[in-house]
Image (cartoon, rainbow, N blue to C red; front, side, top):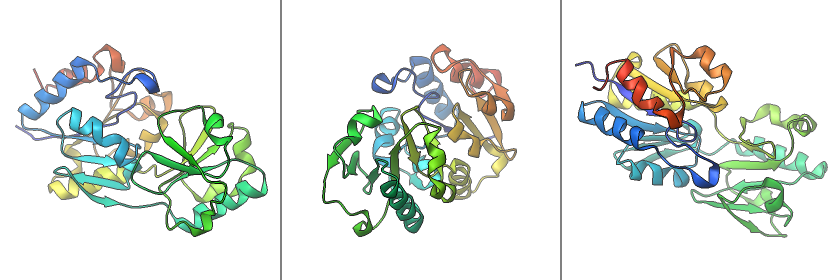
Length: 258
């Protein structure tokens, strides 16, 4: 049997439902268990921070993961790498936000904690999946590193910030822009190097724009039925939606499981 190494995005790929009600379909749990039983490697590949992705990894009984958009690597359950964003570039973004009166928040630890200087920030981002601490005296120049920045703004307002050209960004809602690592493909390559396997043995599943970086011609790319059109265009195969047995159907289609 040719051993394959599978990398699954979380939100919209492994997990279905709204942000505050994510769940992993039973057919997906079954497919992952069958892949492992058949001797394949199974890992998560997500833009989520390590601390926010680990519960999914553990729930599914997995031990390997690419997290933080390619900047974090978990092998055999241990976090072996977690690289922050370019600090100077982040400082320039935050300085420009201040000059232009735009709100911001920052993540500086491998936790679900987020810091901001303005009490209006929490309402502006329209989310509850991180704990936000407001410190009116916070000076971002004193912070040692940044894992993510959060800038409440519309797509149109993004153009006001010229400094965004020098940082990686992603958008998951109309209310907030994330400054975060977006090179999942780099993380997959690092994992395949660790496994000592050729890149052609990798298989990636995804649905969102931040999955584009791992939809590369070096390996097999499978887009969910609910994936963005740009991702489907790059895919080797488009399966059903996440909540319609998409992962199970794709694995059966290719004969990876019965």
